[in-house]
Image (cartoon, rainbow, N blue to C red; front, side, top):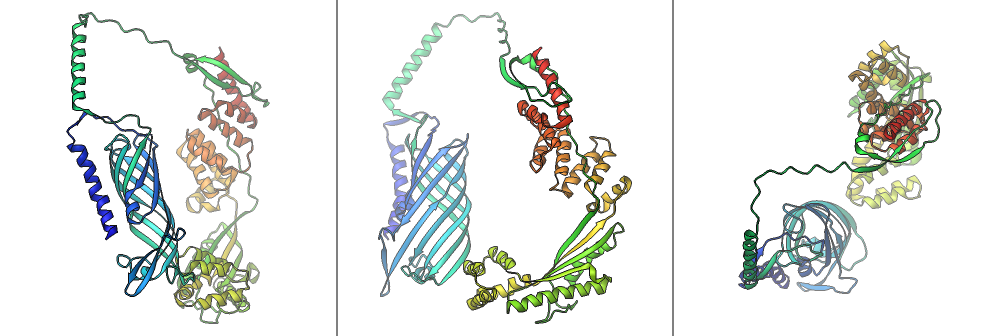
Length: 614
């Protein structure tokens, strides 16, 4: 009842008393309403103070025209400070533990002005907590009987309203809803230390509730409230001043006056950089610091800069590959493939689809097939190693029977138990005792001991591992290696429409060279090339050059950022990009490293400088 009384006083009586005092005081009238703009504000949440005795302090400061950033921090440590509360449930006394640290930054948008009126907020939250023996009700019986220690993180949306009842004192109410992800260890009672389990939970609902008392600091202006007699005196003084000004105002001139001429254009100091004096050989850049009038700079010679395209090397052997994973089901202890057992028909169809795509391609020749078998960690490691080998061999025999491939085309081996795959599956899951399972997987014990420890966990955790994770580990990875014959330009254009992966970068470049530079077909080729070869320096340099020709500096910068080996083509294109971005000095420096085309661009830059100096 004490807590409910405090909440009632905080939520109802305190705001009512404050507002009533302000509106009912006859000595005050509102003379002029002005905007309140504190530079920043300190605050405390009265609900947290009253309900759970949580120390909390927040700061808020302006970050935009109508935006602020609010950063509240809440801390409670009843255990450390020995502030343990007790309540009686029947004949048993339970200890209540409530320890938490919470930070909940919020970005706010104010509908009219910062620090006043309505606002919308986007908040995030992170906390660690250690709570147990909580009251029942309102908390559940399970939370009443156990202790929970862990962390949470999430985000949400909020709405609030702030009323500024004094120049520096404000009152704010806010409510937020959102999501929180909780991870925790479970203990049998509030003061017990033996962990009995772990848990994960996704929470959707209220994430923020506040009634904040705020003190504004660094206020620029405020709503002016003055005594009634002072307001009347000021009004009389303003009326008298206006009458005097009206009497002394000279007769209005009727003749139109010519407006004064505008001031001359300002003199602007800028830094212009030349490239090289000789257009054939690259020399160090020369920097001129000059003062240029605005009009002269506008009529200066504009350099004609050219981007560099790089001719990719010819692929002597066009090697390609297709890869996949086959999740085939086997009878217990068997390794022979049963095409119609469970989902085997669908899995085999995927393999056949990839192989037929290459087999039926008249331009491709299969050179080898690599098959790697894996097993789940059930049974001994030695047996699973042999089982993975036999199952990989059974897939090889199946493909030989269907397609007639010779024995020497295959490379087959068994990798045994796939512990790395199990690690990945568990890490991205929400199973109970997740971190306990991961600790077993990461331990330095031998594989058989790890498998035994997982089995001994039993219960729902091990059942989920066996039912959900182990089947995904029993698979055969395969890779189909093949080569593609070279193409003429006309044939390459046909292949580009049907199977572009068979093209080399050089063939794609020759297709582009057959089109008019700047045409849609020309531009499309370089986008296709960088899509097929995203890690290729040649593809990214040429895509950047094409983007520069189209005036797309943003795309050019993205492509150039992916180049690993910075050659003369890179430096010339980087110089053109920097010129487009307005950095003439760095552009000239890049042209000096850009080879022949860079030298030509530097010479253009020199013409620009000379025209400015004339």
